Length: 260
Image (tube, rainbow, N blue to C red):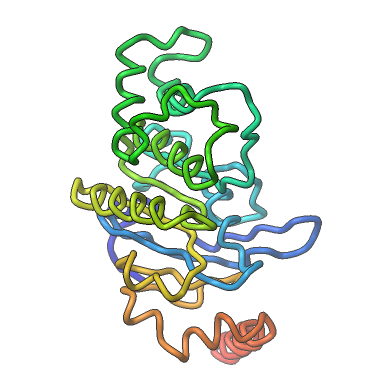
């Protein structure tokens, strides 16, 4: 784990525990997410990857532990954070067009229940241009393909001009054009000095898309640059089944008890 101060990291998680109906989903998860890099959260299904992001943003409650953004609470720093949820969690039948969805990302600055003016609509259109949807601003979101819908939500995050972007499986079930558009946006954000954290499931593309990885299976197995993390040994621990990880946890607990 990095020895630098928590204020150096856009996101710092310490001993985070989350449970759903008494079922443990995250157990003592601890990680530092470095600034200015493209970071992937990787692990098997049910490892708690999406839960980690949601708990960090107070979208779901945690049992214990701490989360800070640049050393402060999410509520204090939320204006510097943008979130792209999983596409499956969104009601795409809601009667709005693509430009209106993107403009929703400006509501913190514009104010709720206040009309979106031409300047905000122009910003929304510019964000759609960045994700390759220049001609889709007036299209109802229900009429868009899955990949186009994903790009609309990416544009909604971009229009916020955040410093940290949290994305929950942005590459899931997207077409090649959308994948290419997302990769380009990620690299543009990095070039601007922004930080990006993505839940990612495809081990074959992680080396192509990201600089840094947090390998998770209930607990953080390891973290670091891609080549350091994505080794056969580390993947065996994370993907070999939760019993493998729990055996390791139990061994660590016994070792700590012997030291006392």
